[in-house]
View 1 (cartoon, rainbow, N blue to C red):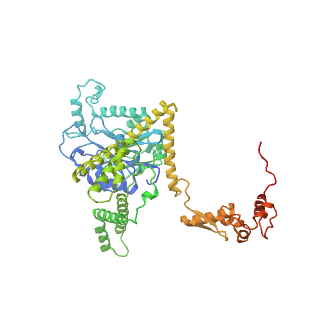
View 2 (cartoon, rainbow, N blue to C red):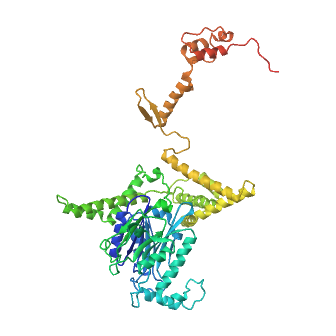
View 3 (cartoon, rainbow, N blue to C red):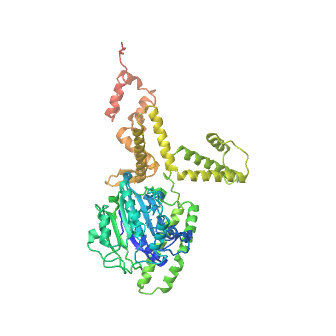
Length: 589
């Protein structure tokens, strides 16, 4: 289940924190990208921020992650346990293609499904849906069918079909029918938008009926497509599965299958699938230059910050206590459980190191696209930062620097106290933070205004100008990547020179003074571009002709009677012969 260029999905019923921990351990070990969880049985409104799913994912230190949860919000908050509900999590590089606007949930607020949409190249999108269909066999006031029937009874009198809470007549007494009607509407909406759709979850229905229903919407059970007849996925169900992953019929899973019932500690099997990212047109995360990824170890402040952060993370993960336990219990030969713990400690230390490195770097390059409004706000923020350093006497700021910034930004200087400067500084920082959230829309607006101004000036059509702007931006981004790949920090600069030695070996020069010396020597041999390459500056010729033509033999050069010393090169002969004074000068007409 590992590897670059694949999507992994896992649908699993989660009913306790212990099962959730097992699932997340599995996600961490197998490098799963997308996880769908059905029948989560949690009222997330009662959990608090410390126990929110995104917070739990962050505590596992498995890299970047994003989560979306859904439960029945149409009933009052009572306790943490609430039957039903779904959740989805994406982990790792795939999070670069998912943002807040691409996470959705059941519009009725019943927690029947959650959605995540992945951005692809050229505007393509793929939506993953994790759903939970009410189980007809579950009864009682707190059961999922009873919860949803209460909702149906409350909104049964709505007759406006466009209303979000409208109940179709055929579903007035059956929450399961309402689920399939609403899911059908949502799948069609997504397909009409040109999206690929994956539907996974706990369907609590006859498998053959679900497969037939999905086929009418162009979706197929991709695991059954590869392996044929499938085993049951719930201990309480019949011989057919009630959990499945459906995707576009034209796609095929690279690998797929089922986990054992005991693997995740649940009465449901975990089911999984690999789909090649290339087939889904997934976007790759932006390239981060090597020099930005590298820590500046020469700066003692960075090293100190890194060591402190690493110590805190290792204490939180209990690394030192775990190492001590392994050391105290170590024997020869090392038992299997201590070997596993040793490997786990090693992985956790590496993760702590990576997390500590992230906090010691500032990767802001190309994070927020250019716009005049954001640029000015950042300059104003810099001004108040300098002003704050000035009034606190933390750093010397030249008066001319402040005057130039005030003139450029239109700021009128006023005598302010330290507290007043701090307030202005906080306002400027808050302004920048707010604008950064909308940096893309500001960039697009600025680009459109430029294109419109060019069109008004008669420089072309609006659409053509915008396409040209996009092409230049892509070219610039590619150029930045290439410069870092080839270790060139500025266009046309030479970073290294190789010289062939007499024995045929190559010697590399990287220092600037060494490269200049080698290049000068090569130019002297090839093009006579240095002073030492002229024979007229040899001592013998200087005696005859002087440095500036003041020597005793200059008259003979002009007469054409100059006697060449022995060893004169052909190029020197031709040059001196060309210096002969002409008897007659042709005057142009």
